[in-house]
Length: 168
Image 1 (cartoon, one colour):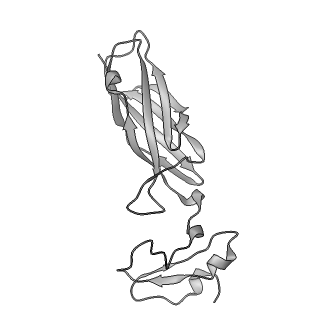
Image 2 (cartoon, one colour):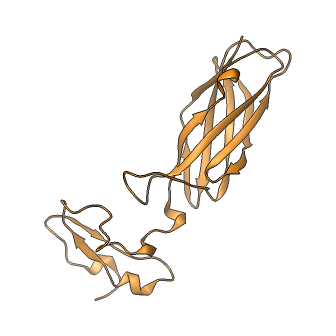
Image 3 (spheres, helix red, strand yellow):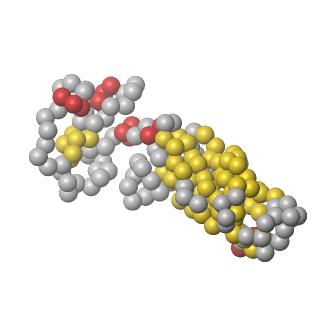
């Protein structure tokens, strides 16, 4: 059987699970037809090398700000923490994941004014990143929203704006 998945016969039901991972030619020859009712990661179908870390979509799973920093006075230091997880390789499960490039954060006020252009966050553990923002003494009293980007290989994930803290 050829390793090229395009030469495999079409199926009336199910999907083709190709193992075309560069550097693993033995896996490429083990393409299987999988019925719709089969578990997604059946150990009889998938091999350990079935996924490449480059193919993982970095998912911002959780954004957190300590309770004491949700409402801030001007001049306060506010830590923003995100958790990035791999939800691609094992559907139904999540694993902490470090993307290839440091995630970035952008902060805006409620009216859309950018107060912090995209800046790198600091890795503080597997899949955990922190950014510490110093509010100026004249910071606008408003709700502040953040967007995050995470890049892994050719995949870039960008979150919609999320309310992270208020300046009162």
